[in-house]
Length: 245
Image (cartoon, rainbow, N blue to C red):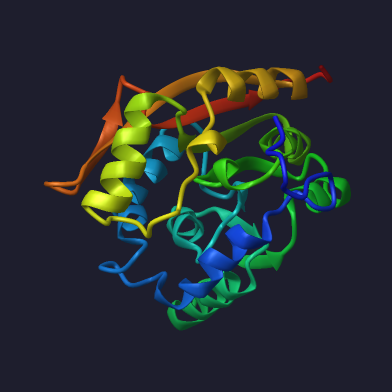
């Protein structure tokens, strides 16, 4: 699936307007009360989902669409050797500055997933891609790159928003307009991704879906937890096949 009117392809799977939206507020990324507050609140759940399903200590981990480095730093604290890539320069500046302030060693690169896949296939034990595939013109290309980047037998983890009426109401109408948890216009409904679509792209690329779990977030209590209901936010765990598809 490629979103009409967006630049796509191996060298251009990016939406400059999307990058600009996030770069404009990148300097507030690490403010736990700012625009990225929901990410700070759900991050412990994301980290636990990854760490409970694969070995993190001493693993070489890649985070695609790393933003300001929230997940990268959490995985580094668990002993991973982390590389984070993004196409938003200001976001990477924020990530590097925060890592430097904390004395954290993370390899941040201004680079697309497709470019890194061409240069370093099979180089990572674990690949994560959180809250990103719904922001690119060709999400299937990201999944193919993930399959190329993770070593045979390695693990891949993605999170995104489901394309359902329930997610439209909760993740867009409520989160953006009623509770103002995230800036208006953060998500476009037609770009959200169903688990069946993600599984299909993964299967074609040589990734086997292991599990899909909902990620529930209560805006009133600000409590986040895993859920059996993937109809709004969800996490997916894939395993790279040991042979080519």
